[in-house]
Length: 205
Image: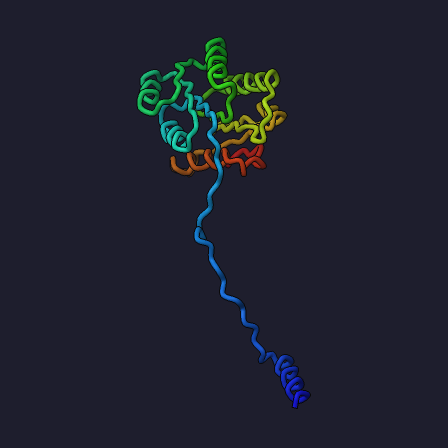
């Protein structure tokens, strides 16, 4: 009888009638959600006292970051400082001495910068601010697994600022074309995540 049972089961298996029972899938309590660690960063926004700047400043401030703004618009910049608590520097980007003085003052207050986001600033200014940052990194090489982020909004300056990669700083460009403000703001935040450290040299994110 035992032999008949074994033979019968083998025959069922051969015919595919023996169905495999899969265990019920268990879902975690937070299934469908992703979360990322984002330690407080020191963020410098250049040419972003108006327009997108307000939204970008808000998302970083809400994440516990420090935010500074370099811009020529003293009215809007002062308003951001008053209402949001950002550090505001009224700067004419064509005056290199003023830019250098403001950047030095910011570094004195914060010791370093983790993220620089540019918009509507001339190419010479972009390169100058990147060079100042690299010189600071050379003089004060604080150990950091994060490195840094240099993000240009509609300013493809990777070729002239790629030297920042020597300090673990990624350089990327975010295009405004075809995107609403929230898309651009979300992309700036995404590129700033520790997990986005492999994205480097993208001309049109």
